[in-house]
Image 1 (cartoon, helix red, strand yellow):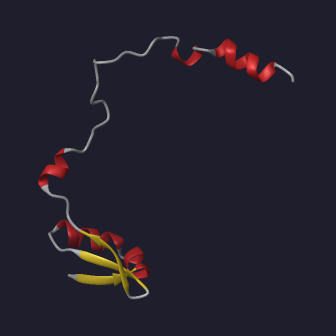
Image 2: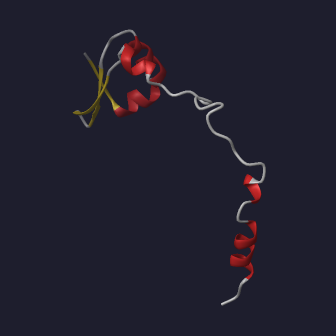
Length: 81
């Protein structure tokens, strides 16, 4: 398992992510003290990634959605104390 300091991790993040994605674990240390561990996701975690549009067809947005409550909002800004 490779250990790198925070500065090196920031500088080489893409390389570290590539190594981790191939199965290696990397520890990131601050002032020589291990702080976090980068590990690859397992297949089950990868399948849980949510996608935009996952509720397509299940909900609907009213045509006047952007105007809902407009009168109340205007009155809040126009009223003086």
